[in-house]
Image (tube, rainbow, N blue to C red; front, side, top):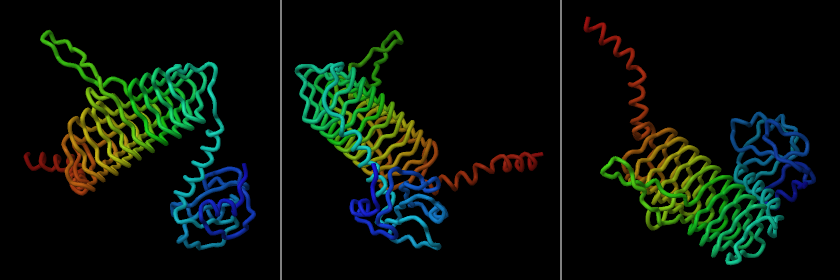
Amino acid sequence: MQFTAETLAEYLHGDIEGNREAAASTVARIEQGQQGALCFLANPKYEQYVYTTKASIVLINRGFELKQPVTCTLIRVDNAYEAIASLLDLYNSMKTLRKKGRSWRAHVSWRAKLGRGVWVGKFAHVGRNSKVGNDTKIFPHVYIGENVSIGENCILYPGVRIYQGCKVGNNCIIHANAVVGSDGFGFAPTADGSYKKIPQIGHVVIEDNVEIGANTVIDRATMDATIIRKGVKLDNLIQVAHNVEIGENTVIAAQTGISGSSKIGRQCVIAGQVGLAGHITIANRTTIGAQAGIGTTIKTEGETLLGSPALPYRTFFKAYAIFRHLPELKKQIDEMAQ
């Protein structure tokens, strides 16, 4: 599929500098752009490539000042990164939205309800009393249990498992092999030293516009619900334990583990391999650096934390400046003691 600079500028509300008829049929990184490619420049670190790229069209921020002439056609937009994301989303949805109907190899309970434009791929299963909203796409080998509710315009990629009673809102994307609604890790110690399983009778609620990465697991609550609020973005390989609540528009990177009954506020940013203890609360707009360990409640909004156990970032860097010199300090102390 090919788009001209004029068409793209109209869609993105951008301004053209160069050939309005320049056309692109593929997307590439600016350092690898070839004839017929659409690229973007959002990070000034890559400015050098805009002068040498062979790409036909480059998206660039309105306020970016060029130091040399360019051979490509420019489309100036308010935010080049956001613009390319919008175009990629459009391209991806055009491919996916073509899929409609139900494979004869899929199993859909006669008591399930499918909306208009739903696609159910081969070997997918939709359980009794479950509801799937309009234009949702269910890829092959997806399992949807009984009494599940899935909203409109969702995409469930191959191997997704949604256990009984869970709820998924509108415009959600769940990537391959993610599990929603598996049992929380609840066991009661007994007198003989063994553990008795505590039945997990709650469910999971995922609100609108949530994206869940591949192989991420969200456990059902012991009672009531594990809740993922609207706009949350979860990376691959994340563990969300029972009764956790994640606030609106929070983003969490891969391999993070969130222990049971913790509550994470709105618009938080949590980097990879972070560990959160159970029964704690994280204030709104908290930023947590990679591999940090959070063992206590964070009450101050907008704080940035690093390390394990985590400290405010300024305190962490002061402590690290001392820590990395400890071998030298020990040597000096040993010499003084002789």
